[in-house]
Image 1 (cartoon, one colour):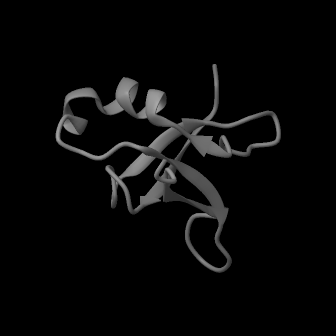
Image 2 (cartoon, rainbow, N blue to C red; image 1 turned 90 degrees about the horizontal axis):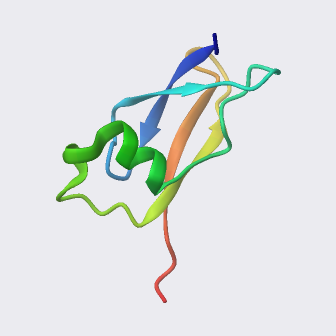
Length: 77
């Protein structure tokens, strides 16, 4: 069985929610959560959301979760 952790999301289409993600053998979540992952997990919740971008894992110092996913919109083009 895979180990999973909750990582808070900041900004973007699922702002304020915790993303339940699998961790690697070192206990680290994926560096990037992309549009495909979001559609599988949240599907219909995203119909009216702008999902052109990715969530990037950022370390957080101090008390609380050790990471947060920060929304990075795709560059126009």
